[in-house]
Length: 177
Image (cartoon, rainbow, N blue to C red; front, top):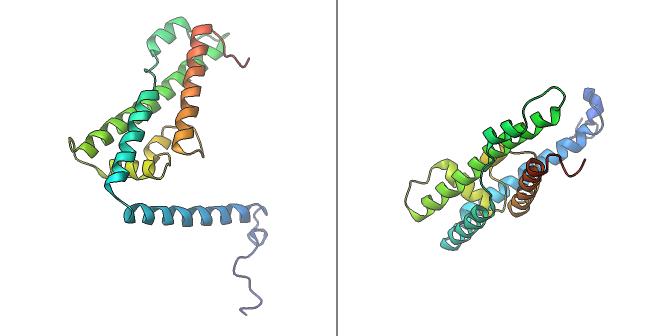
């Protein structure tokens, strides 16, 4: 029996597309690598890691612009049936403001937590662990657009997107149209 029944049967046996096997293997390898990373961070925790995270937090905070003024945007670009892109602009500004606030608050709280000004909560420890691994924290990803980049590239991309929205707001149309 052991020789005739495969350990990993083809997804087609279960009525799935053949690509389901690729997704299964990808999920298994992702889970393995995340488990290895989690054990590595717990074993390598040191003062230098805290210094690196504080430096990253300061760098991230320096790169982030101010929030968009949503009320001003609604006045400049009112919601109109014939101008549907106005709605898109305002909604995207609101989404990016939510993400900006999440990143700012978690960075500020993490900085204060590392310095001992506030208590390090489990959420802040997760953010610190993710930043130490150069990963995007899960609390950011809940409010973010999908991305597989490391945290440095993610912040650069995020700033480019914010600049795009600001240029759209200033010029009245997206530069790609």
